[in-house]
Length: 87
Image (cartoon, rainbow, N blue to C red):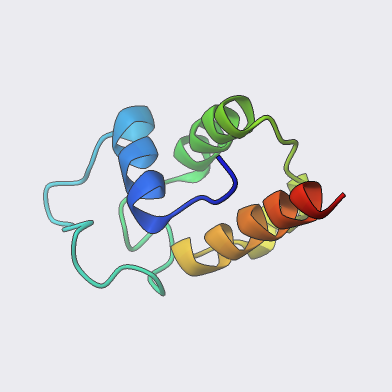
């Protein structure tokens, strides 16, 4: 795959960490932080591990700290995927 979509990310989040009953991942979630979505750092690490395996990439741990919303996380992953494709 050359791009991680929001639907991909939601599927992986659900697979790795489930979904909080009070949160609707199908709603407008792009700019909510992980805590607001019911995910802790362990859930994001598990999600990251699966993405790294499925997309054959290595994500920068420092950049993960700044990727505190789905929008920022997708931008980080897709920037890396685009750079790999361009190389």
